[in-house]
Length: 406
Image (cartoon, rainbow, N blue to C red):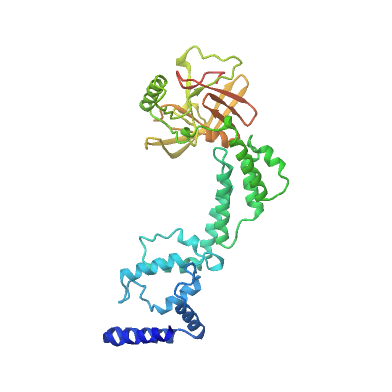
């Protein structure tokens, strides 16, 4: 087979033009001059096995040596530079780099745009970043801040654990991964006061992230297996809706009650509840403060600035389900007086153009509450032990508060 290949190569060389033959000879001369014995052995092994291992990756040092053979043709100012060759080099650069060990540059590629940079510009940024200790330190500080501020949303421990592990992986690429104690402390901080998981955290005596993560995921699986504690998946995308949208949904609900064959569309959990011993509606509707319990909202939101305690200025955009962008201009706390004491809502956004106040289940969960909903109603266990019973009200569909009742 080798003899036949040499014979065919010789015949093909005789039939080609002189220019093509000259290029072949020149390439061989460059390889002979630019490589030592070790490099020659590497090239011979590569030629002998064209596709023995398609998953083989080069580290940064190997790519740097290969770059020496290009003699600057990857630079856009070089006379032999062309766009096709530059795009091919960019593809090789992003597909063959080693992402492990001291030569990994994954954390640098995250901030490099492939579309706007030529191969030469990308290569220079990588060279500068690899030699800059400030770049690594800055990235490590950013990841540490993210770990300290990580939160659990909607009692989803699986997503929380995944986010923490991703942060640890990114720090390992920087050469200084987070220790097990650090990620264990972050996971414990997010779950130790949660009414659903605090008992699970207390039973895990081994100070290990994997042990605590396994116990929390088992607890979450057990909760999801109970039908009464499942949340209607149709509510997951609920957001702040305009008054016209709410009116149209109410009409649709009324029509669907007459025609049971047509599915109902519910934008959010619109409920009312009371902390008084007997269930009764307040006598004067004009004295009510209306709330909508929203499973999609990330923050509690109000449209009355006077309700805020110690308001602070802020600039935050709120995206609604109808792709509308609302702007929050202030943030603060809201206190609701009841006969059982004060109920404090933290980090409530003031949105002037909001049609109705929104009570976010995500924020309640972050504050340690446990929200349990089903098609007929539900209940909210606050972190201080207060129990709010929720009844689905199809007629008015509002969570109403007044004075000492909620």
